Image (cartoon, rainbow, N blue to C red; front, side):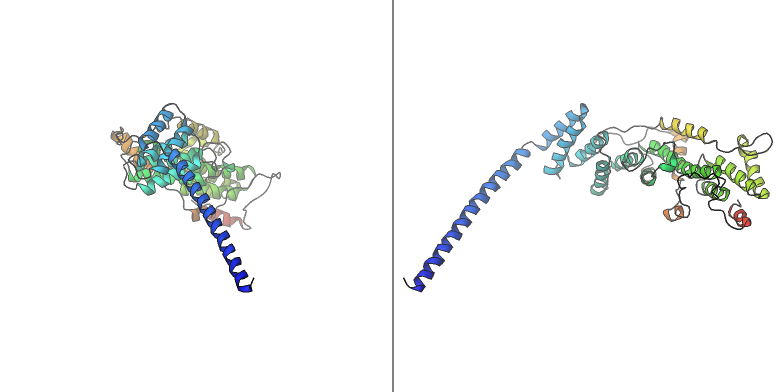
Length: 357
């Protein structure tokens, strides 16, 4: 056999083998595609309405995770269907009840982004705020006693959510409750700073205590922490020997908050337990949201001066900017030493300048 013929046969054999492999592979691929298509068809064999009915039955029975599965099927197989918007609203509700808080904020953000002109934007903002306020895995509970241990970044997000709701949708059925939550959050931020001031007072770090108290007085003037902040300012300045400045704050206490002065004119400090108790009671008045229907009336039932006042009060509340907050860092964890003197300047007169009202 000649070399040319041998080469021809070899090439022919290789070609045949390769062709066979391609055919076999192709057949295998086609079979795989057919099986895959059958699997997809089997998963989405229900109609959009069928999935939605399943979700509603599950929600009625409190089976939130079952409802989430059905609603996600609608989102997957019928993303532009007749139930697309409503299924996302129900998904938000089911995820919150299932305590899937990160999923909730993802879904509310998607709703706001996908349906910017929907009449249910107020609901999405409200649930997003409630989730950030109460349920975020990275946020501590709002009314935890030890405020210095808390991450308040999610509470700032909640405040902004409620603020957007109150300002953009003042007539929403969720606006009054959002406004109450804004007030509670605002007071909580002030209490967070005041807790640091108390910590410094207990360690005789009076300049640092006065700075924290003045921060409350300056940036949270409408909070319920202002009376105690003034008391700490008076007490700290008196301890620093700044009698004139201390007396100015004492005069404010005498006129407006005499309960912070003893009979001999000395200042009472650390009355925080009372204001904390008031905040705990205020949480009991918060409303709870339910499922949203397209037929739902989105006008609030609140009328009169009470409604107007609560919306106005909340609309006027403002948190310090992040750059402003960086000016004063949170108090460190207590150490064993009794006398720390944190933040005390070398010149005591400089402290008086800092604490001048």
